[in-house]
Amino acid sequence: MAKIASVASTGMAFRADMALVERARAREAAACRLLIKTYNQRLYRLARSIVRNDGEAEDVLQEAYLRAFAHLDTFRGDSALSTWLSRIVINEALGRLRKRRRAAAAEVPEGHREGGNGADIIPFPLVSSEADPERTMAQRQILNLVERATDDLPEIYRTVFVARVIEGLSMEETAELLGIKAETVKTRLFRARRLVRDAIEKEVGPVLMDAFPFAGRRCERLTRAVMMRLGFGE
Image 1 (cartoon, one colour):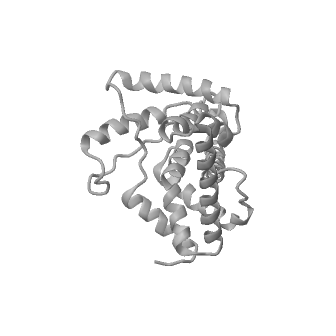
Image 2 (tube, helix red, strand yellow; image 1 turned 90 degrees about the vertical axis):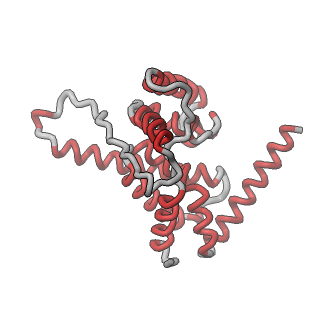
Image 3 (cartoon, one colour; image 1 turned 45 degrees about the vertical axis):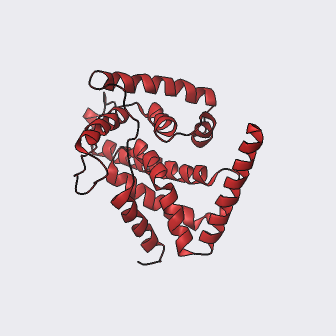
């Protein structure tokens, strides 16, 4: 019975994805807005796990959404809409990262290019309580600790950790999203969890992994920006 229910749920999700895509293809403003707001948080977390900067992650999302809306005709439902969008975001974020690294390398004098590990951490700034009323001061302190520990993860572990632990994707979904084997996901996740646990264990006990929120004003701001760039206006 559980298997039948799972298949039925998958079928319903596929039909819902395709219905939303068809409406967005027809330039229905409400559908475009719903698509953006539905996937904002997941896609933001994935983008930020790669670029490690709030503002740049939002830029990545805007460009990725524009690319996705421009190529909606290519979506055939071979994978979930969330997976299709996530791949676009990851490709955009990795492209930004490559450009950033090339620019940084070009700025370093020739005699100083040896010995760098490319692992400088970009700070994750605190958000004022006025701008982000959903968090209390105590929550921000805990979540900032988790965010810093996640930022400090080596690159090969960071996106796996965000996808599996913070975003809640399954082992198979994460493997499909990142184009790696499920066993590789398992190995990297084990290592990532241990690194994060070691980083926070000395300061706090069990931590609720509800980091990198993308709700409230930030979600509305990005949704409005993408809708404007799609030509829908206010």
